[in-house]
Amino acid sequence: MADWHTPVYSVRKEASNHAVENTVHESPTLGIDLTAGEHLVIVGSSGCGKSTLLRKLADSAELSKQNGNGFSVGLLMQEGALLDHLNVRQNLELIIRHANTNKSHVADLAELTDSLKLDPEILDKKVGELSGGQIRRIAIARALLLKPQVLLYDEPDAGLDVANLFTLASLVNSLLSTQGGQNQAAAITVSHNPIYIARTATRVAQLKNGVLETLFNWQTPANSQDQAQQRQAQLIARLSEPELATTQAALKSALKSTTTSLTLGPLNVYGLRITQFLKSLIGVLSGVLQPTRSFRDSLKVFAFGLGLSFMSGAVFFALVGLMLGATTLAVVKLLSDTALTGWISWFVNPEDILDMMGGRYALYLGPAVGTMLFAARSGGLVSNWLGERVRSRQLDGLRYLHVPVHAYMVTPLLLATSIGTALNVAWFTVAVWWGGVLGAGEFFAMTDAVSRLHVDLYDIEQSRALLKTVFYSLFSGFIVISFAFMPKTSGAQVNTDTTSAIVWSTICVALFELLIVLN
Image (cartoon, rainbow, N blue to C red; front, side):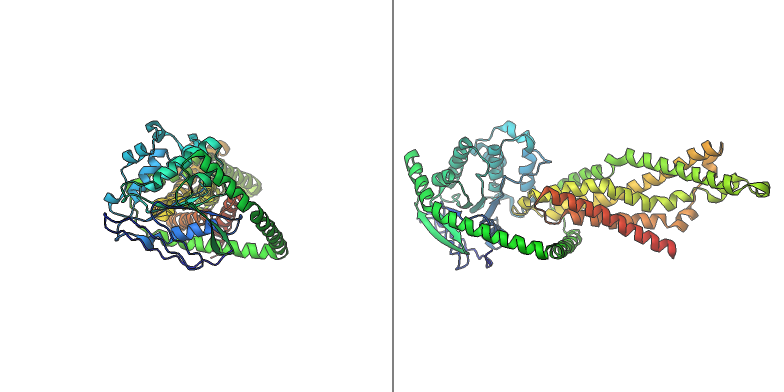
């Protein structure tokens, strides 16, 4: 992959009686130069770095503010990358609330949806209810809310049928057409589809070996069906042979790298994942210090996370706790029946053992066992949910639209997971104690089991139950969220990282508990 230099942008606007010009200068190797209203489409073989180039451009958007207000670059991810736990309206309003700019530089939502001819009813639909074409239109609307001067499209045409391709092409052309000068934008698109390219591009360039080579400079989009078909034929003829050779070379290179990774692979992959985990952990730790731009949005994410981490598992923890508490008393009964035989039974009553034991068994079992169960059950849910948002690049979609991902989602989920763990441990501990009460009444025929198995402040202090609950909850929360926030490219990797979060949370809690007991 090419070694990209950091892009440096420059945006110029001349007086209204002159031609309006927005110029983007990239590194000399790539030589990107755009004017307002121009649509540059970049083609090239898979893996040559097209999407990487777009992300580099978007990552440097902070350098391209116009007079300190507003963002000049907006990136549209493949397949839209809308947040699927929100409806369409909430996806759009989220960008408005988190825009790190003067509100006068944010487009009006009602005017924008009207100009894009979006049905008002679509705003209240969930993302999962939308078609591919509708998702692309909503993603475009989301990016346009920040009034970008340069729009970056990462394969917006992927997976669309011909009808939706034509609709999308018309929409993109209308966005780049002259709109009184000031609102006119430029666009850079990565695409493989000649139908879409022929209808939208004003210039086509091929990315090869880190260099952009201009193939066609049509100046304007196709203004008729015949012209679009002619350009489409030119594209196919121009790209077919070079693309075939490039693709074959890329396949050979991929096979060679695969052979190398099979030879050296496991240790390299394991080391990479450890590095990624440490980076993710550091990111989560630093993200805790980031202030939120919308307390309401963060509170919603926190409530959602608390539902996943605590409410969804309340019955599970209660049943397991009751079973463990009753089993503990069954074991005590079995041991007392075995040990207190013969003349010893004249001096020791089994009930005296319960008086000495009290309810302290619940305080010693609750924090460690409860945290392990949380990691295996509720922590896995949180890790899997956040991991899917990472894999589908929904969080990248937010980041490229300048929403602080840590402040909006990661930190509230960390707090929810940690608090959810503590609540689960407390609930589980109470269930263990109550299971013991039920067991005492059943196995020892005790009518005053509640008073016999009492717990006081001294017991809580001696068992370090509160301290362990707080420590285990925070520790488990950081592990779960850090594994979930690691880079992911497949569903299998989401499951692997979720399992790793469960395993490492359990191992670490077990080791800490063992050290505490031994000391």
